[in-house]
Amino acid sequence: MAGTRGYFNRRLHSLLGVVPIGIFLIQHLTVNFFATRGPEAFNQAAHFMESLPYRFVLEIFIIFLPILFHGIYGVYIAFTARYNVSNYGYFRNWMFLLQRLTGVITLIFIAWHVWETRIAIGFGWSELNYQLMESILTDPFFFWFYIVGVVSTTFHFSNGLWSFCVSWGLTITPRSQRLLTYATLVVFVAISYVGVRTLIQFAYGS
Image 1 (cartoon, rainbow, N blue to C red):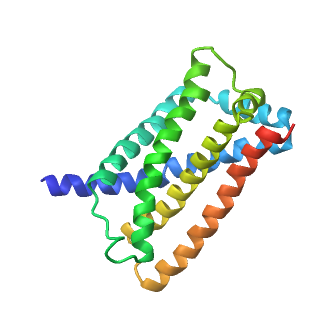
Image 2 (cartoon, helix red, strand yellow):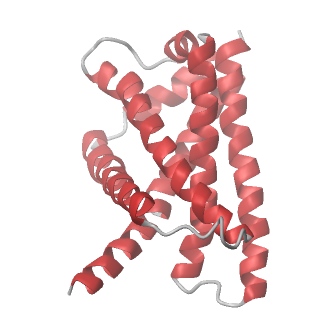
Image 3 (cartoon, rainbow, N blue to C red):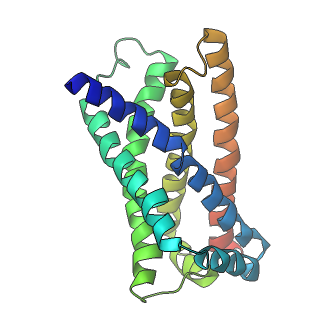
C-alpha cells in the first residue's frame, strides 16, 4: 500500500511540474517580458492578468496548491534520494543531483517572490506595476538573487520536462531520450533568456 501511494505521489509530482506549473511559468515569464517594451506595456499586461475573472480561484487551485504539493514533496525527494554522482559521474546522475538542488533553491525563491509581489500586494502594502519591480531589482543583492532564482527555476522546469517524458513513457528508447536532452536544453536557454532579459530591463532599462 505504501509503495503504491509513493508511486502515485511521484507521478502526480511529475505531472504537476509540467501541468499546470510549467505552463504557468511560461505564461508568467511571457507577461513579464512585456517590460522590455516599456513600463506602460508591462503595466497593461499585469493589470490584464489581475482583472481575470475567478482570479483567486485560479491562483489557489491552478497555481498555489500545485506548487505547494510539488515543492513539499520535492524537498522530501531531495533529502531522501540516493545520489550516484560520486560513484558514477554519469551525465544523468549530475542532472538528477542538480534537479534536486535547484528544486530547493527554486522553492525558496518562489516563496520570497510570492511574498514580495503577491502577499504584500494583497495586504495593500504595494501595487503590482513596473515601478515595484524596478525598485526591487535596482538593489544589486536582489538583482542577483532574482537572477539565480530565475535560472534555477528554468533549469528545474526544463530538466524536469525530460524526467516527465521518460517517467510517463513518452520517450522510451535511448535515442529519443538523447534527442529530448537537446530539446530541453533549447527550452532552458530560451526561457532563461526571456527571464534574465526581463530582469535586466527592470534593473537597468529605464
